[in-house]
Structures are given as C-alpha cells and as structure tokens.
Image (cartoon, rainbow, N blue to C red):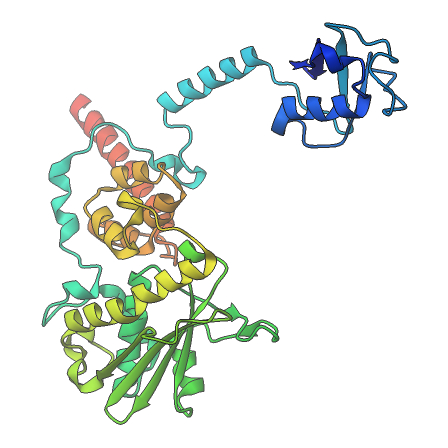
Length: 396
C-alpha cells in the first residue's frame, strides 16, 4: 500500500506493507511521514485528507478514516514552510553570476572606489618591499615604523618597560589586539583596563608586575593576559588565558635579560634603543605568542585550518606585503579571514607612504585604509586635471 504525503510543494511516498495496512493507526503513519521528510519537517504538524480539516483523533486506523491506496495526505505544519521555486532560483543565480563578472559587485562597500581595474603591473611591486613590517626584519639601524610609534607614545622609563613595548609589538604582529574590557575572574564583572601602554606604565609602575590583556580574531570568546614580572635585570614573561585553565606542565613562559635587547633609555629613535630584535622575536613568538594562540583555539574547540588560511597571522601579512593595492583588494574578496588581514593598518600605511608623491592637503586619520582611499581619489583628480590642461595647451 502506498500513500502520498505532501508538504508544501514537496511530495513523498510512504510505503506500508499490505498485510499490516489495515491495522496501522494515524499516529503510526505520522512517524512514517516524519521519517520520509527528514529535516524538512522539524516542527509539530497535523495531517488531513485536505488542507482545512486535519484528523482530530490519531488513535484510529487509516482504514477507519477511509484512506486507501495512493491517497494523498496533506501535512500541515504549525509554521508555514517557504515555497522554493526552482526556476526563480536558477534565474537569480544567473543574475548573480553576471553581476560578479561585471565590476566585482561583491567588493566591500567602503572599497568600491578602489576596485581592481585591469591587469596588475608586477614591476610596480618591488618598491613595496623597502618598508619593513616585522621585528624579525630589523637591522642595526632600522626597525618597524609601528614599533617606533609605540615607543614614542609609551612613556617607557625603564629598560624592562622598553622590552614590554617590543613584546606588545610582537603580539600585534601575531594578530592579537588590545582588550579594553575583560572579565578577569568568572565571578567578577567586566573590568576596564588601560587602553594604551602609557596608561599601563603609569598605573602599574608602582606594582611588582605588569598586566596586558589581549584578544584574537581567530579565537573570539576568550581573552589572554600577558604578565611581565621584573626581577632586577631579568624579565619573566608569562601567558595566561582568562577563565580557562592552561596545562600546568610547560605553560607559555619566557625569561629574558633586558640588557640583551636595550642599549640606552630614550624614545626618540627606536633603532638606537633596541638590539637583537630578531632573537627576541623568535624566542617570544615560539615560547609565548603563538603557543598562547594555540591554547586559545584549543579552549574553544576550534580546529586549525590547512593551507594558506592555516598560516599564522604574521606570515599571511608577510605574503600580502608583496601585493599592490589592486591585488590586495582582490584578495579581500576571498573570505572573511583574508578580508580582515588585507585591511590591516600596516599594509595600507605602507601603501599610503609609497604613493604619497604629492602634497596631501587632508587630515590624516587613524584609519589608513580611508587615508589611502582619499589619497587615491586626490591623485586621480590631479591626473584628470593634468590630462585636461595638456589637452587645452595642445589645442591652443
């Protein structure tokens, strides 16, 4: 015996053996229909021979209800199920594909004026490599510009504070972000923490240790704390997850001698202050920063990605550093993770400084992507004016 069951525009066939069909109750047929539709039917429903009169008593048999072979049973869910039209879906998909092919319609709105246009001129990429991004690229007379800005604004007064500024830069390179509102203990309320290094040094200088709080976009939902404990010339550095226990054996920890990385106490030139930054970068990232990120992912049950997306944040930025702005915008269309990485302020600040060949008559904001967009529009206007003036003078 076969009974048809219809849910919206979908029809399923329920097969009942002939020798038991006479004794099957409506309640038992309900289970068969629910099994036939599976996940499509995940809510309470009623049944009936039409759409207006559902069965009132499900303890009776299908024979008593007058149901015979090949009858149609209407499934009536409590909440209406949307009707999907295959033809409309195909038309919509074709329209979306045409939009993607024309002008890359899925480009972020704020980048709409900087969409990639035409092939990339790879000969213009080499100047992008002249500016360093990371501490492991440092030399005896050059350090990352971001480290110089952090040191200048930090008001660091002691050698271990200067080292902490470098550690903060290394965490930023690893993708960490300053957290300004965290819960230090499970039973406490959110605690407002200093928003910059200058406030941290001013408030915690009288204490016997320094606390810096961070979050990471790849491990949303858990915060980390960096604890720095000065002990004469030595600085003990520990990483800790807030409200998540870390393994007691071999926790993220590093002990360094501040004199090995600081030459003199001054903030006007980071290149004259720091030394051996490459060594500090390798030791701190291997022992604390990257291990802390791994522990954050483990605490949240997040599996690591493979391939390019599985690389650590600074390696992705190192690769994106080779791209010009058109290629960087094209990369931002791939996925959310690469969109976030391609919008990194350090990349757009580099591009801004490289392309800033003329006077920039506008106020520079903290958003380097917006700064570059304004610069690009300014250069485009100047280029149009030059073309127009060239045309006028040629005609005259």
